[in-house]
Amino acid sequence: MELIDGNLIAAAIIAELKAEVAALPGRKPCIALVRVGDDPASVSYVKKKEKTAAEIGIAGRIHLPPVTITQAELFALIDQLNADPGVDGILVQSPLPKHIDEVAVFRRVSDKKDVDGFNTLNLGKVAQEDETGFVACTPAGIMALLARSGIDLKGKHVVVIGRSLIVGKPVALLALQKKAGANGTVTICHSGTSNLPAITRQADVLIAAIGRAEFVTADMVKPGAVVIDVGINRVPDATKKTGYRLTGDVEFTGVSAIAGKITPVPGGVGPMTVAMLMSNTVKAFRQNRSA
Image 1 (tube, one colour):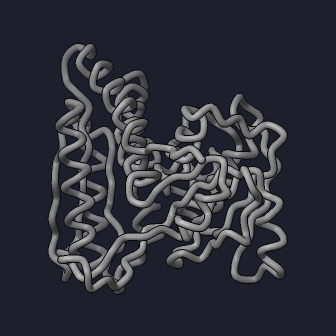
Image 2: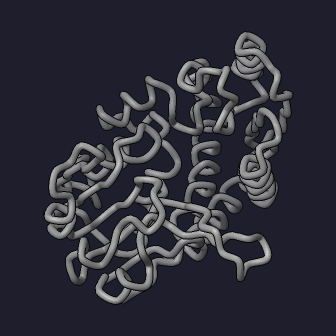
């Protein structure tokens, strides 16, 4: 079994972006990070994104509206950032408060600054294989992990567990694309799938993005398969100071014993998501500057 080290691959991408940004004349790329309220996970994620941006040389503008902000007020902030020529990318951290429509917020962000890749137009560009669009960061990170680990999907059966707009659907579209590293034969499984283990055992590459701790067990995996674990779940653990441990959607001990390659949690897909957000921001800067 070979461990796919997301930290190592993400660090290489960040180093490449740092060199690219350092070589840019004049103004550097800028990302606006909008975090509504004080959800502990969101606070941690935004700090990580701000720190990584600074490391690369990307300017970070942090906006921290209160959890009581109305949808109209949040739209007004997004409109202001959309119109600001000094802002290249906009990320609105999810989850948002229940009184705000997340999909409507994602649509409100200009497709030219949508570095999270959730705008309807950018999702459509993924389907059309239009390279000017922005790919959602986690699916883009999965494809980069595979490519940089020497895994070509051509002719391989790729099984995706999960059909979310954030991971499942876009990563399936990416694996299907007519381009180097892709051309996979893709099956998407979900809560309505019958006899799930029989399908997952056919996978040459299994991507687990279901959001259920240790859902994928060894009996669901073909020996030698590549397993990409997208999940990050908090499981109670009295031996930890925090009272919990982080685990993925894959039961790592059992599956790693038979997989050919596997991503750990943490340290697998997670670091790649942040790296691809920064890559999208540099891409937005270049495209907006040349427009």
